[in-house]
Structures are given as C-alpha cells and as structure tokens.
Length: 472
Image (cartoon, rainbow, N blue to C red; front, top):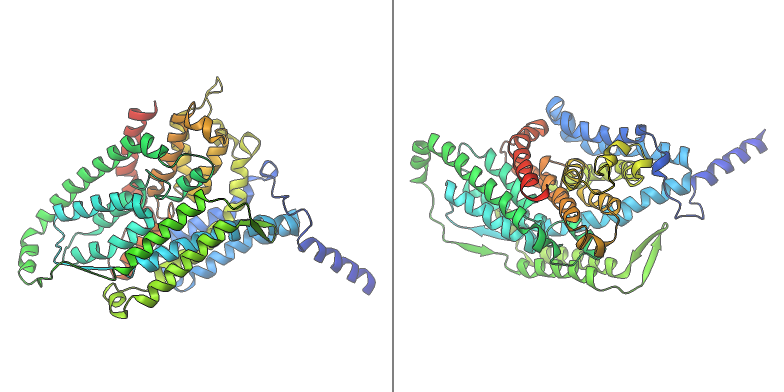
C-alpha cells in the first residue's frame, strides 16, 4: 500500500515539476471559455468591491488578486501538467510582469523626485495648458513618466477648486493614454511593434493626424466643461484666491530629469542593440539587452532615492501605496490573462473565434474599422501591450508588409491599443496610478463604472469620429 502511495505521489510530483519541453505552452484552440472566468473575476472585483465592500477591499485587495491568480494557476497545473503550466505562468511573470513593474516603478520613483512649485491656479486656461503639456511629454518620456511628472502639480493647482474630478478624468484620457501614440517611447504596445520591426517614426507619420484630432477635440471639450464649472464657483474661488500664497516658479530635484533621460535611453538601447546573448530562467529566454535595460531602470530608481532630498518627496506627498496597488492587482491580471491571450492567439480556432471573425471581410481582406474597435475593446480591459501583439500577429505579423500594404490595418491596431486604453481604469497602468495618487490626496474620483460612464459619453463618440475620418 505504501509502495503504491509513494508511486502515486511520485507521479503527481513529476507532473507538477517542470517538464523537459519548456516550449510547449498552452494550446489556445483547446481552451474553453471557462478558462477566462478567473480573469473576469479579477475585473469584477476591481469594479465592484471598492463600492460594495470598501473597507474589506482597502485591506485585502492583494489577497483577492492572489486568490484569482491561484484560481487560474492551480487548475492549469492539474489539467495541462506542471511543465506547461509553469512555462506559461513563468513567461507571463518573468518576461512580462516583472519588467513591466520595474519600468513603471522606476518611472514612478524618478518622477516622484521632481517637485514643481509655483502659484499655478487651476483656472480653465491653466488646466488646459497642463493637459496640452502632458500630451507633448507623453511622447518624450512615455505616458507613465508624463502622468507621474504632472499629476502632482495639477492636483496642487486645483486644490482650492470645488469641481476638480473632471480634470483628472481628462488627464487620464489625454496624458495617460491617447497622447502617447506617436513613438515607441509613448506606450508599451508601440514599443512591442518597434521590437518586431516597425520603424521608430512610422507611427508618428501615420497616427499624428488621428492623435491631434482626438487630443484637440478632448482639449476643447475639457476647456468648455471646465469653464462652465469654474463659472459656477467663480465668486467662491475669487475670494479664496485673495489668500493664496505667492510662490515663484521653481523645480526641485532636477537631477531626476537626467535619470528620466537615462530610462528613456535604456528603452531605446534595448530596442536597437541586439547582442544575441540570452539566459534561460524556468524556460523563459531573457535577452542580455533586456536584462541590462531593467538593471539600468533599477539603478536610476535607486539613484533617485539617494540623490533626491527627503523634503522634495515630502513636498510631493510621495508614498509607495499607488505603485504597490498596481503591483498587487496587476499580478492577478497578468496571471489570469494567460489563457485569455492564448485563446485570442488561436484565432478562428479558439473560443474567441466570433471576435476574430469580426476583423475579416467576406473577401478575406482586413476590416480596418473593426481592427480598431476590437483591439480597442480588448485593450480597455486586457493589458494593451499583449492585445496589440495578438492583433499584430492576426494581421500577418510581418512588419514590412504591415507598414506598406497593410498600413491602415497597422494604424488601426496601434490606435486601438493606445487610444482605448483610456476606456477603463485598468486599460493602462498609468490610469490606475493616477487614480491611486488622486485618491491618496483625499480627492474624489469616479467609481469603476462611473469612469466607464465618463469614457462612454466622451471617448466613444470621439472614436466613432476617428473611425469615419481615418479608417473607412
């Protein structure tokens, strides 16, 4: 009996250990829709729990994320074997999640060491200028860097405003998403395209007009909205303004601008310099240039903490809670998204075949409008970088072909991934970070569904206009 038990235990252990064929990942064509339930569970918890059980969520959201990650990982180990499950989850965490958190965390740390002090007062013209400046910065330092740099001075400028929620919503729309669509530095999906052969300035050439149209329209809507709300509180605001301290414009922590430039340079280095050297960790191949890039990120963050005075970070009310919240929740998202992405990659052979069929015309040609909307719809709730890659591959995966014959298709995929990350709080990491920082300051933001109402009323009509102007 003992012998049989030991044999059974050994067999179970062998199934749970890494198998020799690390490369054998999940077959998306064999997965049923049930494998998407943990991912849907994470999204529903993020949407509902802060409203239904706020105290529980505040103290235990990390445990909830781990619960859903285990709800995906444990069945995967039993059903598909230890080697396949380990490889799939290790790839998601080691190749995607860890570099993602290092990048976002480094930008958060470095940008948090820059304090802009001035007598900026949140009048409509000033707020609109902030958003426009953020739109420019998003393509120079990425949406995360621009959002982290400007959100704190924008909060300070509006601290005496009664109506300020809309300002931060439009900040997420423009600075944290849509504006970062012109270069691979702007948003991770475009960087993935750059790594796969899309020329650095290809998106600048093809997405410039749609981006300017979207940002210009949103800035106009914002200015009109903020002017109306400002006039409602104008008398009260003018009375408060008499007592505002006059602070000259000054920037502390300037060394962090150099560190931001180093981070941007590291991104470019990893995309241009290919050493051909790699190491394997649990079957996941990591390039030497990618590892060097992440080390540079960590060094830049460490230098920022070392070289920035404590007073500067205190003036920014800098804290670790926002980045910790992103790290915990996105851990659950990155694990549970594994089978979902495999089902997408399976194309017409997967559980999402009806979705894939929508992007193809009856004659077999690409339906560019649907590529925009389907890439965008999934990027609203999935991580937009792997979603971009899934549709990039679905469109053929050949950069030279997509940049020429399939230019409009690649433009549609690029626009959908970057623009529609603004549709929800979880569409792009900076969205959640901005939300956390604003709430940490004690300011109100829309609930998950409330934000969807904002994006539905403002962004969806904007995207319909872009479809008519540029994709039909």
